Length: 288
Image (cartoon, rainbow, N blue to C red):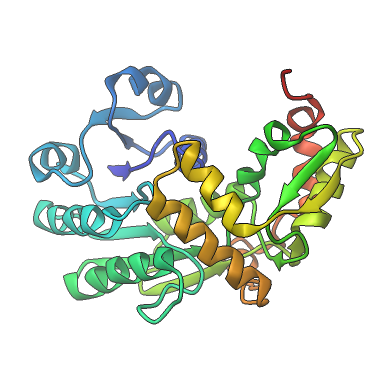
């Protein structure tokens, strides 16, 4: 039995699809019973639990041999995931595949990367076999962009900063390989797309594929951060995004890595393939 956490999230849903294609017995961790039917449709047995609560995690982990670990970005992420690791070990889980982030390190200037580094170390220390997946941001995050276009203009705090985003479907395929194969324990895979692309170029290519001409204008990063907080984004997360923008501007996220090809034996999907597959999402004009 395999367990997938974050089962209705960006990579979790794709991992479930991949495991269903391999006819693997899988349990899906969800926080809300209302999502149970959605994971059943993907071939998984639902289990309702809270990541940071051992009492709910224990039954979900019963009989599980391998698990995919991912949880929402928050100040508590490292603590919750460490609870999961401890509970998984006690339940006899043999291998945890953790979704981390490229550059995970206790010395990173990014709070997101430092949080992941804490959990990576906890897994190393646990004695449970591990595999770390370290993507450099998802192309799927751009699916919200049509709602941010105002009068044909997209505003970015760092429009010319390039970074090597990866298609979440590729990350999920790597996760499925690590969950079902025997050659991935003790390995950390940096997962990127085939090129580093600026926000300006991403906008051009994504909207052009949908038949739209959208221009890009620069906006003050501090103003964007404040706008995010006013829109309901927790301040900790908004400050973390500002750290990320600064790193992008310095070229610190332009690395192109071979992790996808190393595991899957093929090149990662590029931005143009993603644009073609999701053209309908970028074709829609935002509601007035």
